[in-house]
Image (tube, rainbow, N blue to C red; front, top):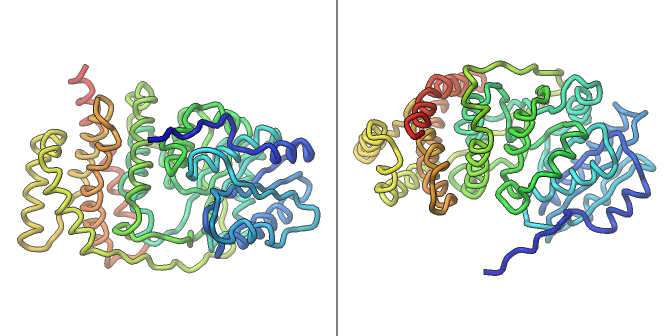
Length: 419
């Protein structure tokens, strides 16, 4: 297998030259993209309008960091209307293909331009408004926060990895209720952008979809003040969890577990959790678009995966939880009813995260075998919220996060017994 060339920088020489020409900048907006010709122009124009409208006295620039799109994404990004004289650059980044490498180019440019504030927004957004730029940048510019995470209204079936793994795990581990740690749309200081560039993670899963959880977790553990920006509805190219979320799951979860090892001395001393300030109130809130879920496919993947990986599950999951899981699988086969309660899910996740730290074989394979269990918990969650409105579904997510907090001692005790 050919080794991928390691690049000392994700930005090309012509972008370095461009940075020298425009010199210091107050605000940089970075947009990672790959084959987003339908949405990129709207995101570019909206971000530029946000900078013009809310920060007319600040020097701004926009970097569209592309993964080598094979459609017209780059052409659309260049053609998108922006104010006269606005600094915009469209470039193909260098390095491992993935969103993280795309962000690496943004961080490096932020460092070169000595920015006060950097913002990143997803390229598939259809609900972005100019106000998003204000809400993500203002707390950083006025030194109220060093890192601003998004706070959205989302469809109850959107963000299943966030709702069922990343939010409850991040909250329980690090003690902060950061609701969208992998939201994709962030504001942060130039200082942390520089810190991000210096980390040696660009040939790992961080260079792919692991980037968002890595940014959020690093910010938490660097001691920055973190705030959340109320952005209204997130309408984007949402994915049915049964069809599209496998690779993303692997990259995000393996990064989460890697970071648990890195910051173990910090999270082991954290008890409970604190709410984070939520800033702003958007003027217009877009209508939530429904996200459909293929229940049958999720159930099938859960059952087939369980059958395939059963011997490994028995080895990794504590006996009591394993027995409960086996009973629930039998019930599903017999009655067609999925039972996968939050407390069982929390303990199983803790079993896997603990095992990951001492796993001497291929850790990616360990994360792979979690996918069927994630599908099982996802289908149980989607059934649970099927008849609920957005607010009631959010209560289910919050209750589950509390269950993870309440079971954190279970994880700590596993570490103590191992020592």
